[in-house]
Length: 346
Ligand SMILES: [Fe+2]
Figure 1 (cartoon, rainbow, N blue to C red):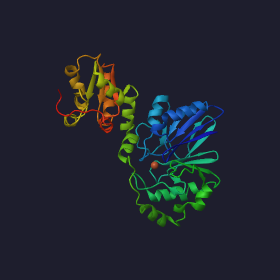
Figure 2: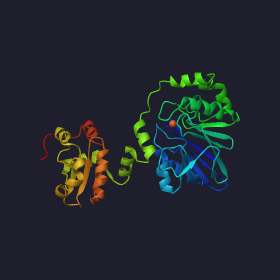
Figure 3: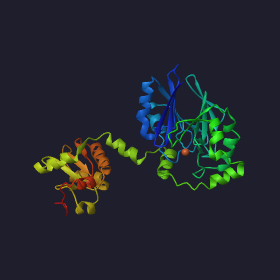
Figure 4: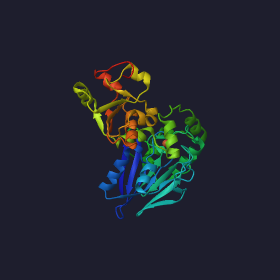
């Protein structure tokens, strides 16, 4: 078995491959690591056959849907998953067959209703059901401490103590544990009895994950994160450095149209000298009158460099093949002490 653990902050994902057949699965892929999974698979001579999420993640962005789309392979989740784009729904006691590997599904509700663990040979991928020295929290949508108690005490923890434990979160960089070690040392499991366990889970008082709303929105719908949207735009536009623009300003802009895509009040407060103004929200409907020549070289900028990236991509969609975005934004421009003007558009 080829087994690679990929850490993204505290999130752990796994590339699991069969050496005999070159088939592989990625478990809990993170949206920002798609190139890494593809590169790891290529390095090992593997072909990814399944994208598996152990549950609906509320704290990070799943890469399953996008990678599945790129590769034309199914997204696998538990039957109880509310996500409409799941291609292969699985249930307790079933197996996902990856070449000669057998990934056994163990339904372990508690952290979420759709949580599952995967047993593969000598190890368990425990998702957010069992972590190293902790358990998944039960205070997020569909969480249930009673169910988690049953999933752990009456199911997972009854398995062979020698099994290795690979969780979906590991904030301390420990990598893996064993069921036996968790039984002996995990403080959350030392609480005796269902009531005490439930009481403990109800009183953890954890802070809400940073991207809860966006993670649930995208993971449940298969829609894009804002970061993905900007990333896709950035992948198809060139950028110009602030130093290059400053130098061009000094020698005259020539054929370069510098386009401020912020709102009017921001423009009038401070803008790049000679810049024109079309707020991003008006871009599509204003171009015909404001920028009749699609062969003009146009540099978009905004406050941070994100909206300008979207604007440059939109202009390219509209046929402005020389639209580029500033590598930076007005905040960085001003912090660099570069020249600015205030007042209305000339
Ligand atoms: Fe989770």
